Length: 155
Image 1 (cartoon, rainbow, N blue to C red):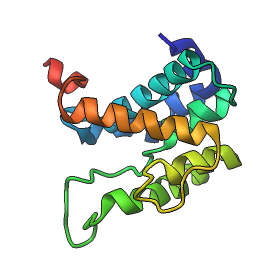
Image 2: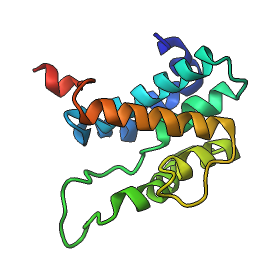
Image 3: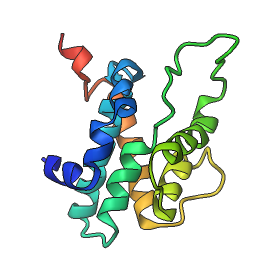
């Protein structure tokens, strides 16, 4: 469900080499970062539709898919990439990476940079960012508790 909308508004992201490289990085439990971002996008659409929230669907989907576009495995720490305080700093890294490859609207920027609220002190300013923030929290909880499993858990 929602695959058609994802393809319509973000086919370029879904087909990109960097987005697909996120299959190799674990997010929570056995869920890859790529699977997590797709799950957050679909959950965001479900929230929007269930509560009949007026918002920009294109920005909602694209922001959700790019919210964790940090492109590294945050579980692996070394001197070059310590990833300390990942929760606080990865939104900025995700935004910088996204801007290198895509036009990022003001709404998408708000989604990406503030999805970790309240760790990011300034709260989201638009409906789309609030929706993705809530969808991300829900998906993260389901993945951490292994209620929602990634493809790696299917093997």
